[in-house]
Length: 384
Image 1: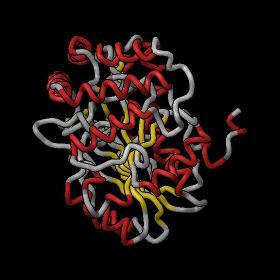
Image 2: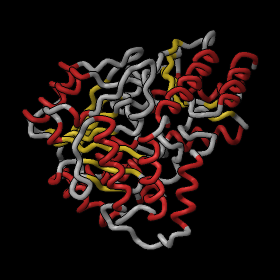
Image 3: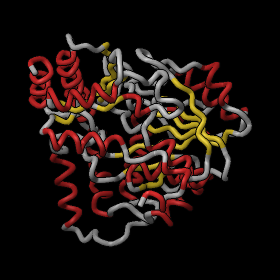
């Protein structure tokens, strides 16, 4: 019954993640396509959820979020990045980062407003822009370094631009925005009276000593940025759907106006548990251990991919490796699932302004898996 879907949304079809996961399940393939861990969240998080469930937290939390979680998020921003955030006016808890992004677009866009997207990008972004009545304007980047062409970016941002969406560390490329790129974004937004949505859900997954630079930490960006994050990646709990948007009071008020009518509030006991976990993580070695464990996983996957008919990119962040095949990436992934029983994502699915351009031949692998899962995938890749 797709004819009931409004015409502007029909072209997006079914998410590539759902499609490839269905193919992987049917073939009994190891799923290195969809970015969900095959291991449990930390015990401290699960224990905090159990305590919250037994503490009577079964009714609506405040729409803007459980106070314990909002305090924890504000404390994290100060401790990790030196950012002063008011938990009362600046933090809004949402049903995952996806809702935070969508609610922000619904709050800021009038029909026909343009939104600049850097390709390749997560498939939610263009869909949410169109659903909110906006017009996507794409700025493509290319393998292997996916460097942001600042001249091309400047040409894409005009007085018709209402929002620029960035993702750092970046899914699917594993790249991080540099200080110069962030400053350029802020200057462009200020010049054209636009706003920035910075998706930073992979903020604690950076490697080789490269730090995460929050977009809002730059003075040129601070007053115009909605920073989005969640528990999904940092705490290996993609099914919890606890995210947040951090922004100056006026921007937060806009996001909250939409959020209250979309989901009203995220699950109360899970919000409380997330707040407890963020506080605990900030006082111990959790983040350092997380980085070390993911560095090991990344290196196992890089070794498994070495020797295949792929060019391999080395990610500076996230839990993805982007590679390039000299041919059709969709066909390559289909054959990979059928003959080697390992699933990946065709990288052209992350490009929307002509998929035969810089996205052709790209293949993304996820390493948010147990070490033994990644080694088993490597055996299949080498010997099948």
